[in-house]
Image 1 (cartoon, helix red, strand yellow):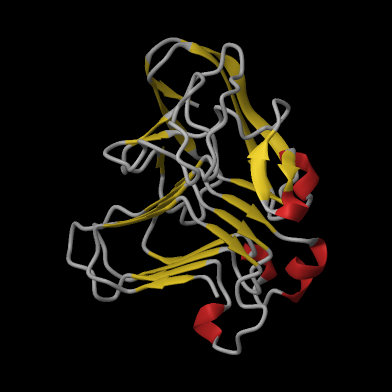
Image 2 (cartoon, rainbow, N blue to C red):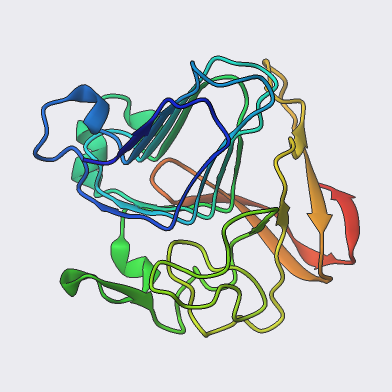
Length: 239
């Protein structure tokens, strides 16, 4: 099974590898890779789910049930892999990777795909989830303020290149000229929620100047459009 939490909050869930959660378990709460319900949380507290790897959960990869307003939940730097067959059997397959029910949650820098080969793991069949220098995960994550970033799941030092790698493993490779956006638990776009509007303004807080590319993916991990692919100086920018 995966991970379930309905604690009082201020919980970080990070650096986990979850394989086929729910496959051999009949309990509905065990269908998910990570399932968080904030019904017992105190106002102003948070759940943060970051740098996890979830492969073929029986239901949604990550699900957050958020009934309490003014809390600062975060889902960032996670890898979620689901086969096309797995997606078609997911009860709510339009949200097969990440589902948020209720209050807004900051969701960013996650990598979702139906093709595990895209990630360039060294040998996923034998359980080696380190990756090669061609992986799109390298330096593609975001820094999390006060996050548990000293070491990855294997004890490797975090942020060995120009930034944080996505997922529970940090490589010693780096992407030339890459930089990281900053995750610090505030809404980074407006209006949020959209409430029927046909436009959305994305706010970027650039910590290191460089080239940034922001793409929109569908629920199958396929790129639908590019929002920006440009050079940015340090500071606040709107897209």
